[in-house]
Each structure stands twice: as structure tokens, then as C-alpha cells.
Image (cartoon, rainbow, N blue to C red; front, side):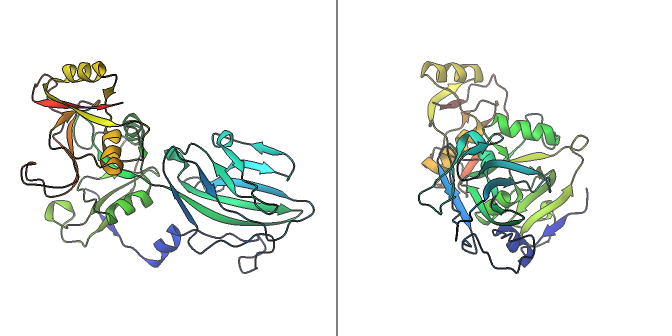
Amino acid sequence: MNCVTLIMVTASFLSWTAAIFHHSKKGKEKALQYLVEPPVYAEVTSRRGENVTLPCVLRIKPSHYRVKWTKVDPLHRGVENVVLITNGHADKHYGPLGPRARLRRAHALDISLLLSGLQLEDDGQYRCEVINGIEDESVDITLRIDGVVFPYQSSSGRYKLSYIEAKEACREQDGTLATYKQLYRAWTEGLDWCNAGWLNDGTVHYPILDPRPACGGDLPPGIRSYGPKDRTQEHYDAFCFTSTTEGVVFYVPGPLDFSEAVHACREKGANLARVGQLYSSWMFLGLDRCDGGWLQDGSVRFPIRTPREHCGGIPEPGVHSFGFPSKSLRLYGAYCYR
């Protein structure tokens, strides 16, 4: 096993998670001339499917200027993901975000960005930049998609997923590979998981609240890191991230085998739920049920909001798993999504 490093919460990390204000290229100490500086922690929180406004307001309006909104990509420094550029008269939209973006223009100095139909991938840092001749100023705003992180393992067993396979597995379960910040937030909210998993930047981590010999020994609680790993040659589990869904998950009683579970959901105009959809209903809709049920990937799970004695003695709230039993077993019900 590779040497495990504990990532501690330090001032440098806190400054990284806060919004970073990038002022004029002539120097960060120069006061903003054209833009109103946002609050120190410039973070906007929303959920998948919702509309959101990223605030940006001019202090003064130059006679000739352009406004450029970009999404900052921490994985590819120097790469500009332009969303929208305007000269005040005409707007030009770019990339996958462009069709869902427009300026709010609530008043003459308002250059705030409106994003509609938020997707999981929209989470991240955005830059509002004013360009006036050879001068430019910018402020950064963080958009956080409110969601839940869930560990995911291949049906073939522990540590079977390459980076690409992990990314695809999360997508198939209605999620994306989690970011480090999303995993960190989940850890602060109680996520404790011993198996290491891929994150979206190609690094491998696992979150520990209760140190124990099998999970890195006596190191203090924290996010344990294996660092960057070979994306094709090395294999781990995955940490996926999902948010609210348009539909609802409901339970159909068993006993059913897997094929019967598929049919039972279809009879009700639904499909077997994906893992991310079950986590979303547990997190945002309060789904709480003791009964194990089949999911689309062939796993059997059940969601608990209030732990109680007759629910298998499970001490913690969460979505609990029976793994991937034989699909011929007629022991479980079905969790359907409609």
C-alpha cells in the first residue's frame, strides 16, 4: 500500500475554498476601479435544475468596454472556459454553458450572470471580467451545487475501477466524480469511509472520522490521500456526487428477484432507481425505509434517516448496502424512480 498522507485543514486550504479575488493584472493590491468588490466569502449555493444568479456589479461604466464571464478550470490552469462576452450591445455565448447563460441587467450597472437549469458540472468558480482598452479587472464567485457524496464500488468488488471507469460509473448512477471540496464537506457532515476512491482531479482519497487499525491506523481524523494516480493502470473505488432530481423514488414490496423488480417498476410507469437517485431522495426528500430493495445496477440498498433498533441495528443514518447479491434471489423489494 502506498504511504497514506493525512490532509490537514490549514489556513492555506481555507483560503483555497474561499472565493479568490483576482484584481487588475497590474497588481492585486490595486483597488477595484470599475467593479464593486463582493463579500469576502463570495459563494452562491443552489441545486441541480434550479436557476441562479452570480452577482457582478459595475462601480462605473466605462465609455467603451467588454464584459467576459468564464468558468475557471482548476484541473487545467491557463485554460479559459468562456461562457459569455458582451460589449454592452450584443452578447456572444460560448461552450456548453453558453445556451443557458445570459446577463441579468436589472439596472444600468448590473452585469450579473444568470444560469438556468443547473447541472452537476456547473459547480465551481466563475470569473466576471471587465476589459477597458488595455486595462482589466475581475472578481471571482463560487457556485456550489448543494448535493450529497456517495462512495461507489464495482459489482466486481473493491478497487476495480480505473479513473475513466470511475467517471463512467458515477455518470451511470446519476452523478459525477466528486471534487475534493465536495468530499471535504461530506466528511464534515459525517462521511466516514475506509475504501479509497477516485476524485475528479485524478487523485485518490478516503474520509475518516473514526480512526481504526484497518483505516490508516492511529492517524487523526481527516481526508487521507494517496495523491495523484495513474488513470489507466491503477484501480480504486469512486466518490460520486449528486443533487436533487426531477422525479421521486418509491418502494415496491417484495420478495422479488432482480428481473421481477425491473418488471414491477415498469408496471408502475417507472424504472429501477439508480444509486444517485436513491441518495438524492434520502438526502432531499427524507426517504426512510428499512426494507432492502433492488437498484438498477444490481445492488441492494435501503435508506435510513432515523436509525432504530428494528432496522438491522444500523447506528448511523445513510443509504446502507447489502452489496451485489445473486440476481436470482427472491428476498428483496424494489426501489423505483418515476
